[in-house]
Length: 254
Image (cartoon, rainbow, N blue to C red):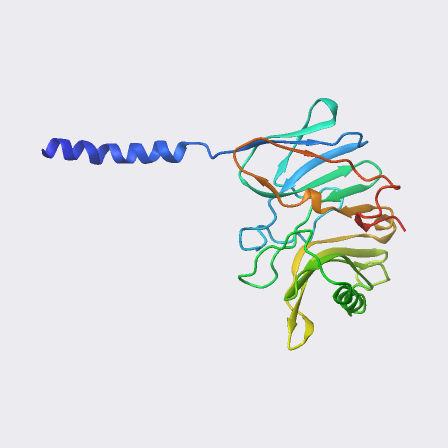
């Protein structure tokens, strides 16, 4: 009887080792870019945890043309880019192309604790939209250009993807500007919309203003929140051309 019990105890660590050694489930994710030209990178960002917190601190040394990604796809035939084994999660895709083009997915991540993600197609009425857009554009910040790109929500809360640019002269370095993107939230309190002090900062990049003004950096919800489990996923997408890019918002050369 003692011998049987001893054997079970000895085999338990081996069993745990075998279980822990099993590879995590992953899936093949294919991004079909169709007629898109000059693509140099297709990456995936596991940007938020399940509570909407940033998985990785904002990099103060980030480069607009060399973004951090958690996984990089490999190009195959017919302009298909493949992530062979992408771990389960929700990803924002990022595409770089020649000619200073960057297209990035996004989600309405929570700003307050215990809130949920909002769907990209969350709607707001026109009166609410007008008030919030006016309030955002008149906000005072270090940046001199504050642009609400997208906003959506319900009668209780509205979130905004905001682009903030400083392209006026500063005392930091001659000719250097900044661009960053944040998620803001407006909450309905006591009969009016109030901006939450807390925001979700997505990125911050320092670069020469002359270079910044040559970039196209668009944000498209169709590339955001791509859910990966254990089955293959295919996303079809084409980088917007000048004639088709109006609904897709972000930075354009100016």
